[in-house]
Image (cartoon, rainbow, N blue to C red):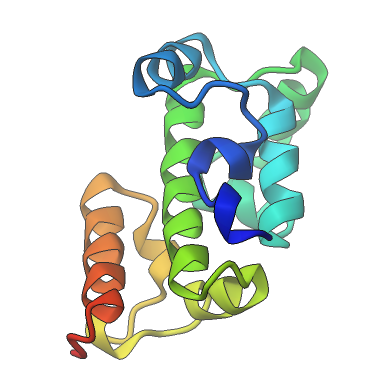
Length: 140
C-alpha cells in the first residue's frame, strides 16, 4: 500500500472521496466489491471482516449475489476501513504492519484488540485517538 492512497475510499476502492458523496454511497449501500477490495488491502479474511462488521456468513453470501451491502453494513465497513487506513498511515503505508498492530492487544487500549473495538463508533474513536497519540509521540 502506498502512503499517497491512505484513505478509507481508496482502501475500499470507491471513486467517491468527498464526504457528502461517500455519505450518499453509504446510504445507498456500498457495492460488495468494496468489501472484497478491503479484504485484499487488509489481508483479513472475508469471515473476519464479516465478524467485525457483524454480518453472518449466510447474509454475506446473499450480499455477494445482490452485489451490494445494506446501509448499516456499509457504515460499519467504512468505519473499519477508516481505522485500517489510519493505522496504515501510522506505519508509513505498511499494510502488513498495520494489520499486525490492529489484530493484537494494545497496551494503551487496556490490552484490547483495536479491530475488535472498531466495531462500534465509540471503540473506533478510542483506536483513532491512540493512533493520534502514537503519531505525536504520546506513549500510553
